[in-house]
Amino acid sequence: MDLNDLTPAELRVWEAYPTGAAVDFHGSPERVVRAVVLRALMVNGPLQDGEIAALKVAGARITGVLDVQHGTVERVVRLSHCEFDEAPRLYGGQFRQLNLRGSVLPGLAGATLRVEGVLRLTDCRFEGPVTLGGAHVGGALFMDRAEFRAPDDSDEPALRLNHASVGEDLVAPGIRVHGRMVCNDASVDASVNLMDAVLDNPGGTAIDAQTLTVASDVHARRLTARGRIDLRGARVTGRLDLAHSRLSHPGHTVLQASSAVIGELWLNEAEPLQGSVNFRQTQTDLLRVAPETLAGGVRLNGLSYTMLSPHVPAERWLPVLRRDIDGYVPHAYEQLTALYQRIGDDHAARLVQLAKQRRLRTTRAWYGRLWGHLQDVTVGYGFRPLRALAWLLSLLAVGSIAYAVHEPPPLKASEHPDFNPVFFTLDLLLPVIGFGQEGAFAPKGGYQALSYALVIAGWVLATTVFTGITRTVSRQ
Image (cartoon, rainbow, N blue to C red; front, top):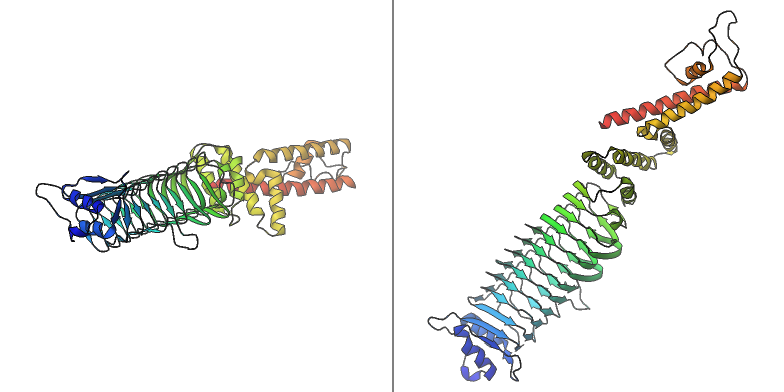
């Protein structure tokens, strides 16, 4: 490039490049630098023996298109707090290190970009789509407090990181994305920081992170998301921390995490989710969430967890299970029962199993529902055995009093044992055990009808008790 064609501002940048000196245009009346000049320095800038060249510019207004597509930049590039008239084109480019901190850009085309070290977009503001699909960052990717905005008249994502790979941390606390953020099939070899982030795409997908892989934790405390969070098939080795978050997608699925494998899933102290959640076939060691947080519909079929925190009475979890969009899901009840059994809360485990049978009853035909009601009233499906004893004592009291007042006549006046109203009633109630009273005396009229009723009640009670015991023993 002919130095005579350079403006005074551009000449400052050109002369500073060989020694890596920084050029700061803040407060300077002449701060316009053409992108073609910067490109010439990046690709084939002048070198000086004994010095480390670098492009370090701050506060410039960069005109034209910075086109480094498929180019290789061997030196550090730092264009901080600059204003770009056009979106840089970095498709397929290779950089040692790229720093755009605090700059304002109309967009960024950087698909398959490769950065050997750190890519820093801290405090940047992008007024158009940023495409980093398939990019590879060997070091950390910094996007803290950056703002991304998709065009109002386009379905283009505001930020694309699909199939990207980050060798260290993805650091983006306070990031603001107005539109869709796409990072499906991306991989991060360390942790992801989205604390205090705002993902705003009402009525659509706020973040598409299907099959995302994170080797450590995802810190997303105080995240505000308007739109769906899609984590289908994601793999988070450590903790996915959504504590104190505000997630909203009314009338739709707000948190889609089906088939995900997550070390720990934290939703503690989060506001009640506005929308449904999908945890089908999700695996996690610890699910930390209050039942009231899952305020909408749920999909829990296949959800597997080892621990549930905080420990709360089963009565608080049962309404969540009843709101399952798929209807009666036996697996959800079995998982909750197994949890309570592991921590030794047998009472809560029985309550969950009782609720399971009641929920199952609603799916039966009318005769199945009738038999279910009978089991529920008599013995609580076998999970409330004392109720059977109460029924037995009540019927025994009724029969004993009735037959004590009106002693039935013997079948054979010359051959009968002494009448005992208590054991006569027991003879009627107990189908198998006999005390010799029932066959020796024959009640008349209404007392004969009472004896029939006690026999039927005894059989029904015995059958329901046997069914409940069989169900309980089979679970053991």
